Image (cartoon, rainbow, N blue to C red; front, side):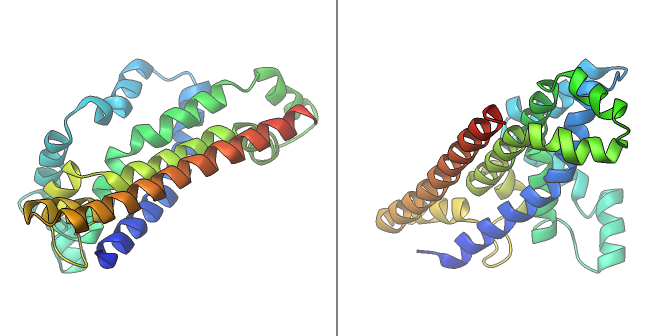
Length: 224
């Protein structure tokens, strides 16, 4: 069992989830309620990682963040190290390819809130921030929670983009999915099977807790 790879995957998943939480709330809320020109195109761009092969997305991210790109050169000038084949580069790539898993469920959750509820808050003299914190977020919380769990589980098992952008550097970019692939290539099916079972168990536990929490929250809201 490659515990270093597992811990690295968990760290990557947690950071990705935390970064996408405010991004998903802001983007999902804006797409749900704010008239935006070219909304269909924006939604298509958000959903693009769902249909583009991971290796294709990984290739474009590798080019965009590589040492020959303006962004890659700027990063190296500021931080003194290349962005690709590093944990930072892996995290940026993870945030990008998880955008649909974070934004889409949150957008649907905000769309499900009746406009009259928000208008009632305004009539009561509540500020936009108060409406967000005391009305919108509690009502949208099941969708937000689902988005976070999907982001966590998807990051944990992602392979193609991770391999393209990060490679397989032990302790730096070698995630549990890459470790499983390496064990299979080495015909070590016992280790690959153990790591696969652990990965499956963590993902199943995360999704089950999400369903349980969402069910209890919806039941509580129904009795309010």
